[in-house]
Length: 185
Image 1: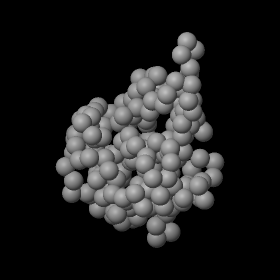
Image 2: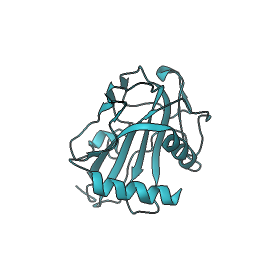
Image 3: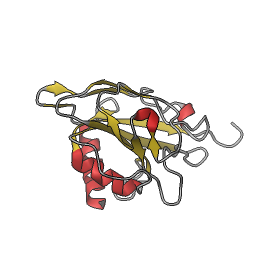
Image 4: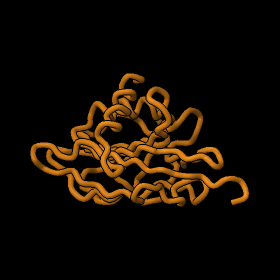
């Protein structure tokens, strides 16, 4: 798992352009996704805002994709990167993953999609929250999966991340920066 993260980080550093990188098509068909913000993560998706999961628009999905997944990680260093969110088994025909998903293991509103968890935390999106006055990069990746994952909701984020990586046939990566205000700002 650590080697995979190291390679993913190197790939991001080498392939990132304008905050977006990744394999964007399969069999000549595009995988196109829109993610909020340009280079900065909007405050509403952090601990200083509503702390809600971001809105993601899936514009096109290549064949034979059967599901979509989303992962979010703090981009701190090449080896240890806290996983903030894993979401998988979003039906491939869904064109929008709405903002503010509940922190539940399974999401009936998204066709039974499932969310992972960090340690003893509740499943779902853990809002980025760097130290006060610090600036942090976050890596969001939206992946097209060749088949739904046979993982229960509430699976540990690291295990879900490995399964998502293994089933990915196309992906788009978005790096967003959040600068947390210092105390009193």
